[in-house]
Length: 254
Image (cartoon, rainbow, N blue to C red; front, side):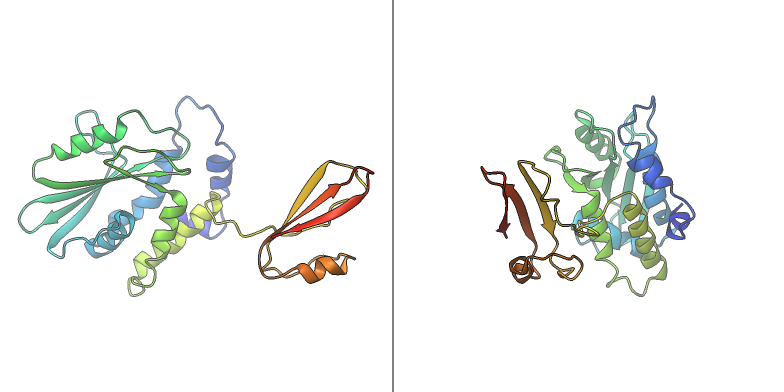
């Protein structure tokens, strides 16, 4: 899937994960598909690559004494099923667990975080458990966990590229995941592709346009020299309002 999206052979993310966000399916599988697509390739990578990914996501430096790191998908722990669990084996036979609960359109279940942490901590040898919830929007999660938006996730793995430059598999995964999330509309606001002067002949109470700034003012034509001179590299809002006589005037506001 990652390669199909990267080479523009599929439009599935936009159709299934974005356009169908409001669909009321009897069983939603988007989260499982996204989990498998994004995290699945990590199952084939060495422990050092997983150590970098976990350290970036959980903002924690993993122990240099780790002998091995494995990844499990939807493990069943006494009827509790986290989406992804990384298990870090330490030299003293203890283990650290890193749980990732993936959310896309479905809500976070009541006590879901607490039940997952309790179930994983019951595993023999577990020394420390960390938990994050990945979501499209900011969530209020249990104090035992941390919430990361998918935009946070994307930014953190991209920041790994510099330190992972010698690891071709990891850097390739980062590029492909970045492209996939872009197609799923997980991206920073980059301004508007074009900006047009409001129709001042249409008497509306008030309208507004946004000027992204960094694109420069040459991309539009406007007869008002004062407006052109006012533009800069900074983002501004330009409001068009009507006075009591029905005459149009401009308000310029940074």
